[in-house]
Image (cartoon, rainbow, N blue to C red; front, top):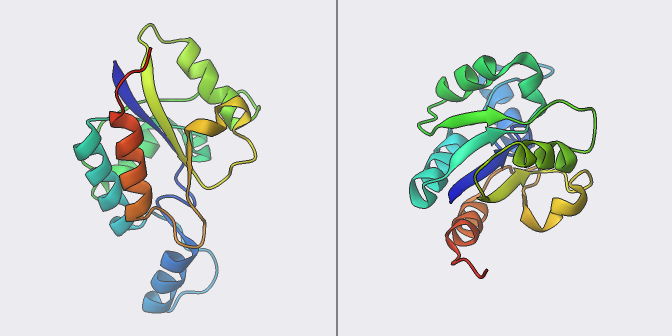
Length: 153
């Protein structure tokens, strides 16, 4: 059984705090794009500890999976991205379900996202981050625990 992380970028791998720090340090005004290397480091830790793979569910996937992989790698990502959810203009939870339905293997998974409103029936798999702080050590620990739980079927 594979272990998967459905990954949103905004509010998980970047945050309001990080954007403010980056803008301050560069004396920039307006939007600051990119990913927080510290949050990507926490994601790497999660992947190492759980032996999980990543499926991109972020709206960044609209720019293509190669773009997402380059963005992650440029910020120190060391894991493996195995795909992206389809763009169906539906709730994100339904797009994740469509990806799962297309798989042969049965998967254990968590969803890292800052928005709980569009998870539909998959909300129990959500580890909700907050846009203010993004991914934290507590989120990583919770995800590892969930991904490593013994099968109860």
